[in-house]
Image (cartoon, helix red, strand yellow):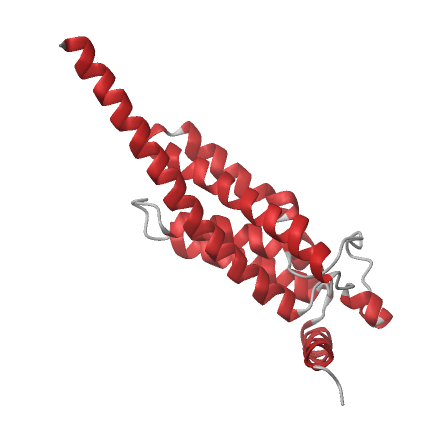
Length: 198
């Protein structure tokens, strides 16, 4: 009788084959390859974070994005990947290998692209940005990057689900921690100012 892990992997592979057989096309190949590169090393999210940092009003949230991505990387890429040591889908089934991107050599579980994307998107969803479109756009971007990892068959669906959960948790933690530190810094600055006036 197959173990739970084997059953999950078998289901994961069925889903990947379904995606490949039903959605694959030259246009989708180009789009998904481009989208996945936006998530390489959290590139697009670091751009957003640095932009927010340059705007004094949202500097705290820019810092929170970086903290969230860093947390997701440490827990996911440096911790869980080496704990589970799950091989990539294309190693379990060579027919899933793609030449659209360079095949990653690291372990599969959880998806780092997904965790960093959802970590950043979660922080952005907790920001007081005035533009209503910004938060849905951040979520859509995270979902698109996560799906690109499935389309390219470099992650199992369960890798992506775990990455999303990890990212959301890291995003919430980052906002809370950075918020507390920012409040303490503001209080200390206020007390210093009052002391000078006194």
